[in-house]
Image (cartoon, rainbow, N blue to C red; front, side, top):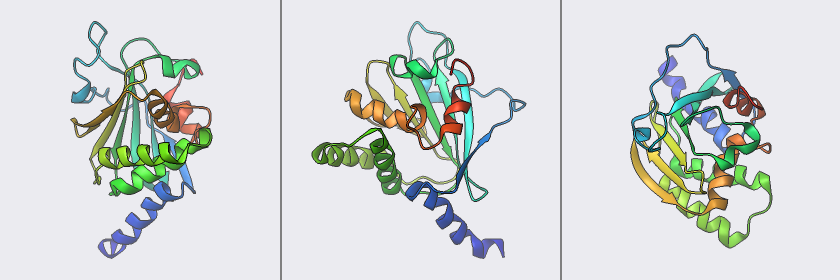
Amino acid sequence: MLTSRRPLLRALAALTVLCGAWASTEVLSSQTPPMSPPPELKGLWPGETPARLQGQARLRFLGITVYDIRLWTPSSQMAAHSWAQHPFALELEYATSLQGQAIAQRSLQEMERAGPINKEVSQRWLAQMMAWFPDVSPGDRLTGVYGGDGSLRVFHNARERGHTRDSELAQRFFGIWLSPWTSQPQMRERLFPVGR
């Protein structure tokens, strides 16, 4: 019975990427064992302390887990109002299968919440993101690394998929989760447990 419902469950979970409705944020228990930083962050910030977990949350859609998100920072706690001035990494670990094209399209829609984007620019950004984001399956991870200087690097399961020094693209992209215009304010609160 459960096997016959899996395609329906996957389709419903994919809707959260395509429409964003009925999504909810869940607090991940602080009682879980301490997590190690993903391997792509090893030695990423020379001269800094190793990456540390600042906050985490879980995105659910109609009771189905879509992904867990973790904010990694190189040193002290990063405040919500100044996130674009510091290096950090956002790691998304997927619990359901999604198409890379759908992830890219939804990302662009979320980025437009901060204001209109020129058509030529939005087409360029979409093409870049479609190249960066592969189809994902349960257990896959996408990690975005922000250099604090406007740079963005994207990793899939620890392998680099692409990068840019377009600071507007980088800030709009990470703003999906970290800026005041996010569609998931509760998730933002979980990622910035202090200094909001």
